[in-house]
Image (tube, rainbow, N blue to C red):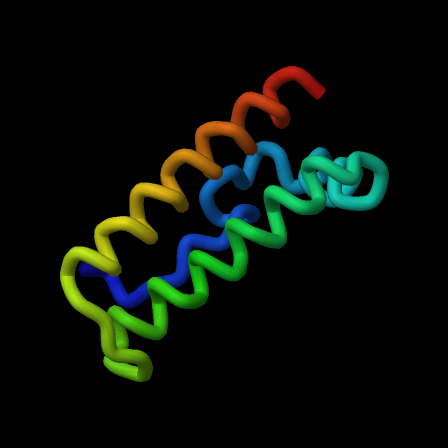
Length: 79
């Protein structure tokens, strides 16, 4: 457990400019990044004890974040 948010610009520092451009010009990417951000913050709140959750619920959110991160990376590579 890291207690450190996994922000997209930190996960993909080499794509910082592409992240900004896609958020502005690609509605699908914008929605994916918003969902990633929401899930990421929820996981962070669980890790830091600000929000309670079962281990199963936290694990499910981690899996969703991983799937989104993979989809976001694929879009970034293709852009």
